[in-house]
Length: 147
Ligand SMILES: [Zn+2]
Ligand SMILES: [Zn+2]
Image 1 (cartoon, rainbow, N blue to C red):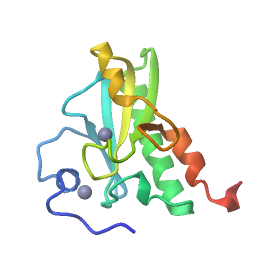
Image 2: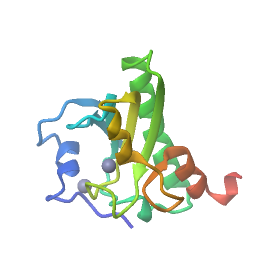
Image 3: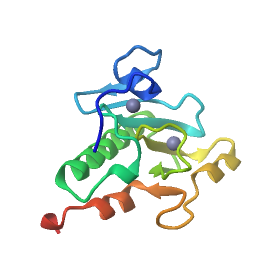
Image 4: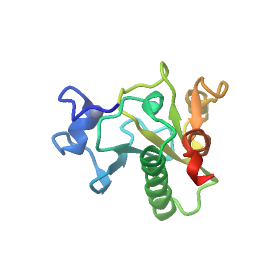
């Protein structure tokens, strides 16, 4: 389902550190960095090293569930470290066609949104449209065997 590294993909370039980005976390599965155009008090992105285009490629299976869980854990730990007094945390994904970059990325927010109208970019417009909360996506791809 997922390809190898894509040379034209900006996020694949970040995973190979050939692009200037402030890397906040890196391991063999995921990389985290600051959104270059932040929409909140803190706004981080967590991406898989593997080139997975969008949430539509994720399936109800253990490896996809583990990957998204791991992305969420990394994002939450970074926000708790860097913004311990935030109003609220929020984690989620844009669903195509509303995703900006075709490499799966978890948006991690320490709220408030800054400026406030930026919240508009992250509205959920129904289960398969707009922004999806990470917890909702995890429910969708949770393997049947672990229910
Ligand atoms: Zn990529
Ligand atoms: Zn996005």
